[in-house]
Image (tube, rainbow, N blue to C red; front, top):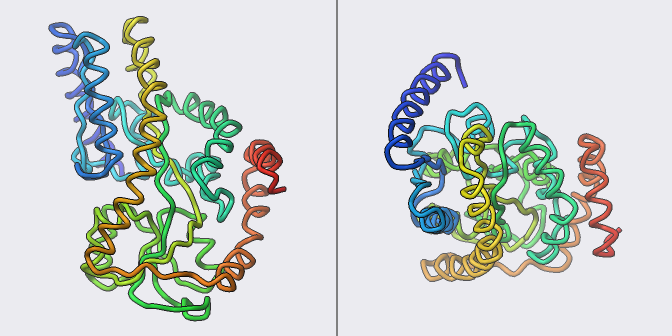
Length: 333
């Protein structure tokens, strides 16, 4: 973020804080919640449900206003810093996009580390405490975490081997996906979600690595034809609140919000699993084809990307203990 924009955002945030302060004196606390996802996205719907329940649980004393589609001017990779610096009191933060500041937040997206939502729950048993430490040292608190569904390669071309993917320009959301697809010979380009559709429309990329959910958000059927269920990486949205804002709440408000987040998180996970099935159906109903990947092709995908696990753990030593505990429990080690 350049200094001019930072100054502008800081000034705007200061003005917003003053306005919120007036409302706080008159009728409780109001927080604007920043998310880059559109209104129809299930993560945004989860955030709105959470906001509604927070208002009820606090008797209207704490109100969260969801600002979807990047209304507040922040891109996804800026959210950790924006919450840290108090530019926004609460945000839906995509963990894998924050690795420039906190590399361990990319752990879930180690290629083929996790195969299902149930395995992700096991990983979280060991990894979530580390994420909580990351949040704390960045002046924030994780209220809840919800995964994106399984990941796909959405492409213009149909292939039956890795050789057919060589040189294909594809959008990726994070460095692990970039490293993975580079390892199999593709030409991955790191692009935030807000710039993905223009990149497709202009021909800058000919494919996207993402969930079926995002495929529906972006109406991929207008640009792409084939869906490959590679299930190669995972990631989560973290609902993070600025600690300075959090500490201004009454203890009973904090307790109510924490209890609510704990109650809703499993429900939000179930929404994620269902949304994958619903979104995949919508993509195929609109003309996209789900390609059956051969066992030989999948075996080669895994073989070519296997070294990335050790490379990640070497690069991010803090991830070694939770990852190895997870591998031991799931008998993958």
